[in-house]
Image (cartoon, rainbow, N blue to C red; front, side, top):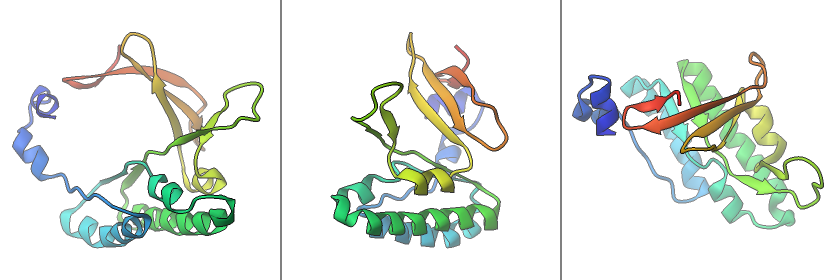
Length: 164
């Protein structure tokens, strides 16, 4: 973090002071933090909200097909809370998600995003990130209303994100 700020001629301490961080411990807490975000965003003038591992707690707490409907309804409510946050305050919400393997897929990529159509329909742009060759990463746009499907390679270094 310090290296990236310094490479961009920014004060690392000042950059860190502008980051608001919260860790959730279960899906209810995750939903509560999304509701509290409305107050924090307005007070701190936040322009980017990042949710790391969107579905992790939901998958861990709602196990089995008998709980699938309840999980998806709760996840849908959570995602729409994030969408309202983005629309009301004109900010970007970026979420990371998990993948799951589809054992019935005989052709093509057996991996698919966890969360099903609820997550797919609530997302404006979906980008698949994976490891590339020679310490690079590949970002592939898989769904976007404005952008064509495309892949780009990049590298994360001390200076931040760079073109390899």
